[in-house]
Image 1 (tube, helix red, strand yellow):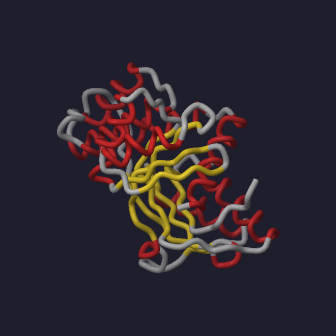
Image 2: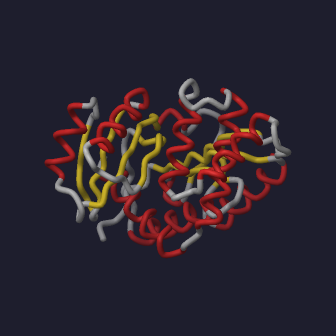
Image 3: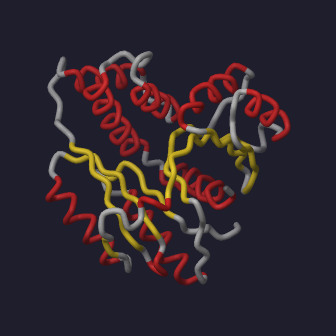
Length: 242
């Protein structure tokens, strides 16, 4: 899982440096609204909504914002209808990329994603060409400077986590999606405060490229993530050591 840990570390530092909280809020609000629309407004009976709310809390989203997003999803407040899409693509060096979308205009989004891929040396793949290389995993990240890995391991594994590893200043806990919430709750209950917690798509294997192609692929992934309609980007690119 080391490549994933490095990617989370880089994403976290990049996000802090860019300070794009407004864009992050917009994407989480979309996810909360769609989750509420699909499964109802009660997080106790709607796992997807619970996960989206956790993501909102992880970025310090005010409770009022979360509540309004739920009401928009339920139709109690005026809101936009979003469509979910997943694009499968390839980046420089043949890196596999999964792009999760929430959009109110799929034609606009398709054109934008194609344009970003084209400019970044990537291309869209056919349905099924990339997705099979990824699995859903619950990922919980902690600041390694604040907590000892051994202390996290004791709680996480007891709660059902699959793995705990530390790289690039981040201790990452990995769990199956159906155990993600129980593991997170156990860690929080033990006094550990996470930097990030989400269910992500993780590749079975990572691809290592030469430095030039790695930088180009990283730039492409970052440009995709900056698109308003892109909720998340998963890749099998192995990130370089810092």
